[in-house]
Length: 372
Image (cartoon, rainbow, N blue to C red):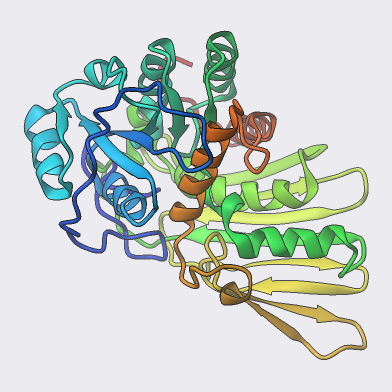
Protein backbone atom coordinates (compact mmCIF):
# COMPACT_ATOMS: atom_id res chain seq x y z
CA UNK A 1 0.00 0.00 0.00
CA UNK A 2 1.22 3.46 -0.80
CA UNK A 3 1.36 5.54 2.30
CA UNK A 4 2.86 8.64 3.76
CA UNK A 5 4.42 9.21 7.12
CA UNK A 6 7.61 7.61 8.38
CA UNK A 7 7.37 4.41 10.36
CA UNK A 8 3.76 3.53 9.68
CA UNK A 9 1.30 3.50 6.79
CA UNK A 10 -0.21 6.91 6.18
CA UNK A 11 -3.18 8.20 4.25
CA UNK A 12 -4.37 6.61 1.04
CA UNK A 13 -2.87 7.84 -2.21
CA UNK A 14 -6.30 8.29 -3.80
CA UNK A 15 -5.64 6.05 -6.79
CA UNK A 16 -7.93 3.13 -6.15
CA UNK A 17 -6.32 1.69 -3.03
CA UNK A 18 -8.58 1.39 -0.02
CA UNK A 19 -8.87 4.82 1.54
CA UNK A 20 -9.63 6.14 4.96
CA UNK A 21 -13.31 6.92 5.07
CA UNK A 22 -13.06 9.18 8.09
CA UNK A 23 -13.39 8.46 11.77
CA UNK A 24 -16.21 6.07 12.32
CA UNK A 25 -16.50 6.69 16.02
CA UNK A 26 -17.63 3.09 16.42
CA UNK A 27 -16.38 1.54 19.64
CA UNK A 28 -14.20 -1.55 19.55
CA UNK A 29 -14.66 -4.11 22.31
CA UNK A 30 -11.81 -4.49 24.74
CA UNK A 31 -11.19 -8.21 24.51
CA UNK A 32 -10.75 -8.42 28.26
CA UNK A 33 -11.69 -12.07 28.50
CA UNK A 34 -8.17 -13.23 27.60
CA UNK A 35 -6.83 -15.27 24.69
CA UNK A 36 -8.23 -18.61 25.83
CA UNK A 37 -11.66 -18.05 24.30
CA UNK A 38 -13.81 -20.95 23.22
CA UNK A 39 -13.29 -22.66 19.90
CA UNK A 40 -16.84 -22.14 18.70
CA UNK A 41 -17.53 -20.88 15.19
CA UNK A 42 -18.72 -17.51 16.47
CA UNK A 43 -16.36 -16.87 19.35
CA UNK A 44 -14.98 -13.31 19.43
CA UNK A 45 -11.55 -12.78 17.88
CA UNK A 46 -9.48 -10.12 19.65
CA UNK A 47 -7.32 -8.02 17.32
CA UNK A 48 -4.30 -5.87 17.99
CA UNK A 49 -3.34 -3.19 15.46
CA UNK A 50 0.38 -2.57 15.04
CA UNK A 51 0.84 0.91 13.49
CA UNK A 52 -1.53 3.85 13.28
CA UNK A 53 -1.39 5.18 9.72
CA UNK A 54 -3.94 5.23 6.93
CA UNK A 55 -4.00 1.54 6.11
CA UNK A 56 -4.28 0.66 9.82
CA UNK A 57 -7.27 2.99 10.07
CA UNK A 58 -8.92 1.50 6.99
CA UNK A 59 -8.45 -2.04 8.27
CA UNK A 60 -9.75 -1.13 11.73
CA UNK A 61 -12.87 0.38 10.19
CA UNK A 62 -13.39 -2.88 8.28
CA UNK A 63 -13.01 -4.90 11.49
CA UNK A 64 -15.64 -2.80 13.22
CA UNK A 65 -18.21 -3.97 10.65
CA UNK A 66 -17.55 -7.67 11.34
CA UNK A 67 -19.58 -9.60 13.90
CA UNK A 68 -17.45 -10.92 16.77
CA UNK A 69 -14.34 -9.00 15.77
CA UNK A 70 -13.00 -7.06 18.75
CA UNK A 71 -10.34 -4.38 18.28
CA UNK A 72 -8.71 -4.71 21.68
CA UNK A 73 -5.38 -2.88 21.48
CA UNK A 74 -3.18 -0.71 19.31
CA UNK A 75 0.58 -0.24 19.38
CA UNK A 76 2.86 2.40 17.90
CA UNK A 77 6.40 3.62 18.40
CA UNK A 78 4.71 6.82 19.62
CA UNK A 79 2.40 6.55 22.62
CA UNK A 80 0.71 9.76 21.54
CA UNK A 81 -0.11 8.29 18.14
CA UNK A 82 -1.37 5.10 19.76
CA UNK A 83 -3.63 7.00 22.17
CA UNK A 84 -5.04 9.19 19.41
CA UNK A 85 -5.82 6.11 17.33
CA UNK A 86 -7.35 4.34 20.34
CA UNK A 87 -9.55 7.32 21.14
CA UNK A 88 -10.70 7.54 17.54
CA UNK A 89 -11.90 3.94 17.45
CA UNK A 90 -12.83 3.28 21.08
CA UNK A 91 -9.93 0.86 21.65
CA UNK A 92 -9.27 0.10 25.30
CA UNK A 93 -5.48 -0.32 25.34
CA UNK A 94 -2.81 1.79 23.66
CA UNK A 95 0.88 0.89 23.76
CA UNK A 96 3.91 3.05 23.03
CA UNK A 97 5.97 0.23 21.56
CA UNK A 98 5.47 -2.72 19.24
CA UNK A 99 6.92 -5.09 21.83
CA UNK A 100 4.32 -4.13 24.44
CA UNK A 101 1.52 -4.83 22.00
CA UNK A 102 3.08 -8.16 21.05
CA UNK A 103 3.20 -9.19 24.72
CA UNK A 104 -0.53 -8.59 25.28
CA UNK A 105 -1.76 -12.12 25.99
CA UNK A 106 -5.39 -11.14 25.55
CA UNK A 107 -4.91 -10.81 21.80
CA UNK A 108 -5.72 -13.58 19.33
CA UNK A 109 -4.05 -11.91 16.34
CA UNK A 110 -2.07 -8.81 15.42
CA UNK A 111 -2.43 -6.92 12.15
CA UNK A 112 0.98 -5.53 11.10
CA UNK A 113 0.49 -2.31 9.13
CA UNK A 114 3.97 -0.79 9.08
CA UNK A 115 5.83 -0.17 5.82
CA UNK A 116 7.30 -3.40 4.47
CA UNK A 117 10.81 -2.39 5.53
CA UNK A 118 9.70 -3.00 9.14
CA UNK A 119 7.60 -6.13 8.58
CA UNK A 120 10.35 -8.61 9.53
CA UNK A 121 10.93 -6.86 12.86
CA UNK A 122 7.29 -6.13 13.73
CA UNK A 123 5.83 -9.48 12.69
CA UNK A 124 8.78 -11.28 14.26
CA UNK A 125 8.11 -9.65 17.63
CA UNK A 126 4.51 -10.81 17.50
CA UNK A 127 5.31 -14.36 16.44
CA UNK A 128 8.01 -14.65 19.11
CA UNK A 129 5.38 -13.66 21.67
CA UNK A 130 2.98 -16.34 20.44
CA UNK A 131 0.60 -14.05 18.56
CA UNK A 132 -1.02 -14.96 15.26
CA UNK A 133 -0.12 -12.42 12.57
CA UNK A 134 -1.73 -10.87 9.50
CA UNK A 135 1.10 -8.94 7.82
CA UNK A 136 0.68 -6.33 5.12
CA UNK A 137 2.21 -6.64 1.67
CA UNK A 138 4.80 -6.64 0.36
CA UNK A 139 5.22 -9.35 2.96
CA UNK A 140 8.87 -8.49 3.61
CA UNK A 141 11.78 -6.78 1.85
CA UNK A 142 13.13 -10.06 0.43
CA UNK A 143 12.56 -13.79 0.43
CA UNK A 144 15.17 -14.37 3.15
CA UNK A 145 13.11 -12.32 5.61
CA UNK A 146 9.93 -14.05 4.45
CA UNK A 147 11.47 -17.47 5.03
CA UNK A 148 12.56 -16.40 8.51
CA UNK A 149 9.00 -15.37 9.40
CA UNK A 150 7.43 -18.53 8.00
CA UNK A 151 9.99 -20.66 9.85
CA UNK A 152 9.28 -18.78 13.09
CA UNK A 153 5.53 -19.25 12.65
CA UNK A 154 6.03 -22.98 12.05
CA UNK A 155 8.28 -23.26 15.11
CA UNK A 156 5.70 -21.52 17.30
CA UNK A 157 2.74 -23.24 15.68
CA UNK A 158 1.26 -19.81 15.05
CA UNK A 159 -0.99 -18.55 12.29
CA UNK A 160 0.67 -16.32 9.70
CA UNK A 161 -0.80 -14.75 6.56
CA UNK A 162 0.15 -12.07 4.07
CA UNK A 163 -2.55 -9.41 3.81
CA UNK A 164 -3.04 -9.94 0.07
CA UNK A 165 -6.66 -8.82 0.20
CA UNK A 166 -7.10 -9.45 -3.52
CA UNK A 167 -6.89 -13.20 -2.90
CA UNK A 168 -9.86 -13.02 -0.50
CA UNK A 169 -12.15 -11.02 -2.78
CA UNK A 170 -15.16 -13.21 -3.69
CA UNK A 171 -15.18 -11.94 -7.27
CA UNK A 172 -11.48 -12.74 -7.75
CA UNK A 173 -12.22 -16.22 -6.39
CA UNK A 174 -15.06 -16.56 -8.89
CA UNK A 175 -12.78 -15.45 -11.73
CA UNK A 176 -10.13 -17.98 -10.76
CA UNK A 177 -12.78 -20.69 -10.59
CA UNK A 178 -13.94 -19.86 -14.12
CA UNK A 179 -10.38 -19.98 -15.40
CA UNK A 180 -9.69 -23.30 -13.70
CA UNK A 181 -12.92 -24.71 -15.11
CA UNK A 182 -11.75 -23.90 -18.63
CA UNK A 183 -14.04 -20.95 -19.38
CA UNK A 184 -11.34 -19.30 -21.52
CA UNK A 185 -9.35 -22.37 -22.47
CA UNK A 186 -5.62 -22.56 -21.75
CA UNK A 187 -4.11 -19.31 -20.48
CA UNK A 188 -1.88 -17.59 -23.02
CA UNK A 189 -1.36 -14.07 -21.63
CA UNK A 190 -1.95 -12.09 -18.47
CA UNK A 191 -1.78 -8.29 -18.43
CA UNK A 192 -1.78 -6.18 -15.25
CA UNK A 193 -0.41 -2.81 -14.18
CA UNK A 194 -0.33 -0.45 -11.24
CA UNK A 195 1.02 3.06 -11.53
CA UNK A 196 0.51 6.38 -9.75
CA UNK A 197 1.87 9.73 -10.81
CA UNK A 198 3.10 11.32 -7.62
CA UNK A 199 5.21 13.34 -7.90
CA UNK A 200 7.27 12.03 -5.01
CA UNK A 201 10.18 14.13 -3.82
CA UNK A 202 13.62 12.79 -3.03
CA UNK A 203 12.79 12.73 0.69
CA UNK A 204 9.62 10.65 0.25
CA UNK A 205 9.55 7.10 1.63
CA UNK A 206 8.90 5.73 -1.86
CA UNK A 207 12.32 6.97 -2.94
CA UNK A 208 14.20 5.95 0.19
CA UNK A 209 16.32 2.78 -0.12
CA UNK A 210 16.47 2.52 3.68
CA UNK A 211 12.68 2.07 3.67
CA UNK A 212 12.76 -0.36 0.73
CA UNK A 213 11.29 2.28 -1.54
CA UNK A 214 10.44 2.05 -5.22
CA UNK A 215 7.49 1.03 -7.35
CA UNK A 216 8.07 -2.72 -7.23
CA UNK A 217 7.42 -3.60 -3.59
CA UNK A 218 4.64 -1.05 -3.06
CA UNK A 219 2.76 -1.44 -6.34
CA UNK A 220 4.37 -4.19 -8.42
CA UNK A 221 3.41 -6.78 -5.83
CA UNK A 222 -0.18 -6.49 -7.10
CA UNK A 223 0.33 -7.40 -10.78
CA UNK A 224 2.86 -10.08 -9.85
CA UNK A 225 0.42 -11.56 -7.32
CA UNK A 226 -2.40 -11.44 -9.87
CA UNK A 227 -0.36 -13.35 -12.44
CA UNK A 228 0.87 -15.94 -9.95
CA UNK A 229 -2.62 -16.48 -8.56
CA UNK A 230 -3.57 -17.77 -12.01
CA UNK A 231 -0.35 -19.45 -13.16
CA UNK A 232 1.82 -20.13 -10.14
CA UNK A 233 5.51 -19.35 -9.86
CA UNK A 234 7.04 -18.48 -13.24
CA UNK A 235 9.79 -20.43 -14.95
CA UNK A 236 11.42 -17.31 -16.40
CA UNK A 237 11.58 -13.69 -15.29
CA UNK A 238 12.70 -10.74 -17.41
CA UNK A 239 12.64 -7.17 -16.11
CA UNK A 240 13.80 -3.68 -16.93
CA UNK A 241 13.38 -0.43 -15.02
CA UNK A 242 14.30 3.21 -14.69
CA UNK A 243 15.94 4.01 -11.36
CA UNK A 244 15.84 7.20 -9.31
CA UNK A 245 19.05 8.97 -8.27
CA UNK A 246 18.59 7.25 -4.90
CA UNK A 247 18.73 3.84 -6.57
CA UNK A 248 15.12 2.63 -6.35
CA UNK A 249 12.87 1.80 -9.30
CA UNK A 250 10.28 4.34 -10.40
CA UNK A 251 9.07 2.71 -13.62
CA UNK A 252 9.36 -1.06 -14.07
CA UNK A 253 8.34 -3.57 -16.71
CA UNK A 254 8.22 -7.33 -16.13
CA UNK A 255 7.66 -10.31 -18.40
CA UNK A 256 7.00 -13.61 -16.66
CA UNK A 257 7.08 -16.86 -18.60
CA UNK A 258 5.91 -20.40 -17.97
CA UNK A 259 6.94 -23.61 -19.68
CA UNK A 260 3.34 -23.98 -20.84
CA UNK A 261 3.92 -21.03 -23.15
CA UNK A 262 1.90 -18.60 -21.04
CA UNK A 263 3.23 -15.09 -20.56
CA UNK A 264 2.45 -12.25 -18.15
CA UNK A 265 3.16 -8.65 -19.14
CA UNK A 266 3.23 -6.51 -16.01
CA UNK A 267 4.23 -2.99 -15.05
CA UNK A 268 4.39 -0.66 -12.08
CA UNK A 269 5.26 3.00 -11.74
CA UNK A 270 5.46 5.89 -9.30
CA UNK A 271 5.73 8.37 -12.19
CA UNK A 272 2.46 7.86 -14.11
CA UNK A 273 -1.20 7.10 -13.54
CA UNK A 274 -1.64 3.83 -15.41
CA UNK A 275 -5.06 2.22 -16.07
CA UNK A 276 -4.71 -0.20 -13.10
CA UNK A 277 -6.56 -2.89 -15.03
CA UNK A 278 -5.99 -6.58 -15.61
CA UNK A 279 -6.92 -9.22 -18.13
CA UNK A 280 -6.32 -12.89 -18.71
CA UNK A 281 -6.59 -14.31 -22.23
CA UNK A 282 -6.91 -17.97 -23.10
CA UNK A 283 -7.24 -20.03 -26.24
CA UNK A 284 -11.04 -19.66 -26.31
CA UNK A 285 -11.76 -16.37 -24.55
CA UNK A 286 -10.63 -13.71 -22.11
CA UNK A 287 -11.58 -12.02 -18.85
CA UNK A 288 -11.23 -8.27 -18.42
CA UNK A 289 -11.20 -6.56 -15.02
CA UNK A 290 -11.59 -2.75 -14.94
CA UNK A 291 -9.77 -0.18 -12.83
CA UNK A 292 -8.97 -1.45 -9.35
CA UNK A 293 -8.65 -5.12 -10.34
CA UNK A 294 -7.24 -6.09 -6.96
CA UNK A 295 -10.60 -5.30 -5.31
CA UNK A 296 -13.05 -5.51 -8.21
CA UNK A 297 -16.79 -5.04 -8.16
CA UNK A 298 -17.19 -6.51 -11.68
CA UNK A 299 -15.43 -8.29 -14.51
CA UNK A 300 -16.43 -9.33 -18.03
CA UNK A 301 -16.07 -12.77 -19.55
CA UNK A 302 -15.65 -12.85 -23.34
CA UNK A 303 -15.99 -16.30 -24.88
CA UNK A 304 -15.56 -17.11 -28.54
CA UNK A 305 -19.01 -17.46 -30.13
CA UNK A 306 -20.87 -16.07 -27.09
CA UNK A 307 -22.14 -12.70 -25.95
CA UNK A 308 -20.01 -11.05 -23.24
CA UNK A 309 -21.10 -11.89 -19.69
CA UNK A 310 -20.59 -9.42 -16.85
CA UNK A 311 -20.09 -10.80 -13.34
CA UNK A 312 -20.89 -8.51 -10.39
CA UNK A 313 -19.64 -8.60 -6.82
CA UNK A 314 -23.25 -8.40 -5.66
CA UNK A 315 -23.84 -11.83 -7.24
CA UNK A 316 -21.29 -13.58 -5.04
CA UNK A 317 -21.44 -11.75 -1.71
CA UNK A 318 -23.90 -9.87 0.48
CA UNK A 319 -21.31 -7.10 0.84
CA UNK A 320 -21.62 -5.67 -2.68
CA UNK A 321 -18.95 -3.02 -2.34
CA UNK A 322 -15.21 -2.94 -2.72
CA UNK A 323 -14.43 -4.03 0.83
CA UNK A 324 -11.87 -6.80 0.43
CA UNK A 325 -10.24 -5.92 3.75
CA UNK A 326 -13.41 -7.11 5.40
CA UNK A 327 -13.14 -10.36 3.44
CA UNK A 328 -9.49 -10.91 4.37
CA UNK A 329 -10.22 -10.21 8.05
CA UNK A 330 -13.11 -12.68 7.96
CA UNK A 331 -10.80 -15.30 6.44
CA UNK A 332 -8.26 -14.81 9.23
CA UNK A 333 -10.98 -15.20 11.83
CA UNK A 334 -12.29 -18.33 10.13
CA UNK A 335 -8.79 -19.83 10.16
CA UNK A 336 -8.21 -19.03 13.83
CA UNK A 337 -11.52 -20.55 14.89
CA UNK A 338 -10.71 -23.67 12.85
CA UNK A 339 -7.23 -23.97 14.36
CA UNK A 340 -5.50 -23.50 11.00
CA UNK A 341 -1.99 -22.02 10.91
CA UNK A 342 -2.27 -20.62 7.40
CA UNK A 343 -5.01 -19.73 4.97
CA UNK A 344 -5.76 -21.89 1.92
CA UNK A 345 -6.64 -18.65 0.11
CA UNK A 346 -3.28 -17.00 0.85
CA UNK A 347 -0.90 -19.93 1.45
CA UNK A 348 2.58 -19.14 2.72
CA UNK A 349 4.28 -21.01 -0.11
CA UNK A 350 2.50 -18.71 -2.54
CA UNK A 351 3.76 -15.71 -0.59
CA UNK A 352 7.31 -17.08 -0.71
CA UNK A 353 6.98 -17.67 -4.45
CA UNK A 354 5.96 -14.04 -4.97
CA UNK A 355 8.91 -12.84 -2.89
CA UNK A 356 11.26 -15.00 -5.00
CA UNK A 357 9.90 -13.34 -8.13
CA UNK A 358 10.29 -9.86 -6.66
CA UNK A 359 13.86 -10.69 -5.61
CA UNK A 360 14.66 -11.87 -9.13
CA UNK A 361 13.22 -8.69 -10.62
CA UNK A 362 15.25 -6.53 -8.25
CA UNK A 363 18.38 -8.47 -9.10
CA UNK A 364 17.85 -7.81 -12.79
CA UNK A 365 17.07 -4.10 -12.46
CA UNK A 366 19.85 -3.45 -9.98
CA UNK A 367 17.93 -2.45 -6.86
CA UNK A 368 19.51 -3.43 -3.54
CA UNK A 369 18.52 -2.24 -0.12
CA UNK A 370 20.80 -1.50 2.86
CA UNK A 371 21.76 -4.68 4.69
CA UNK A 372 21.26 -7.01 1.72
